[in-house]
Length: 199
Image (cartoon, rainbow, N blue to C red; front, side):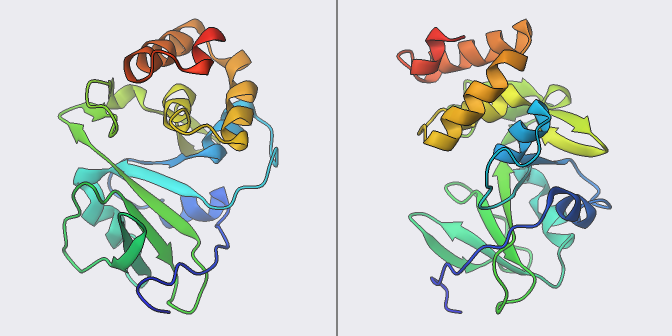
């Protein structure tokens, strides 16, 4: 496949992805709709076209080293894939890496690089919004997931039907602290966001 051939997706399952990173010597977590699905506790609520694994941008080389023989391509905006060179440090605006076992195989995993400083995660779209790394992830059945309030903040940018469903399914299960965090974050980035009325 060529540099810009996006190709097809056959996403890994959560257990398969977790197995790949089980020995990774740095934090990682499942993101996206699968993180909401785990929080809600309902398997197969809807189809998932991909699987996202988050990590801190500062740990990117160690995460990449967990996939030593894989075909790894960084997504250069606005939609070009290029090979992630050995030892290359990716910086914004590049924050996504697509992964597949070989160039002739479908894509099966997306790695999302998250900015941080010290012990704080930083929201890429608005650096005013931060979270202690210790409060960024929760664990279910041994698998780390992005906490739902942060995941919903990501989904709030361009609300698609699947994002609306994730919000509606997740909202009743958010505790008061989680709702307050999401409400404050949304007020900062988009004071007119439709979700604020429900929060």
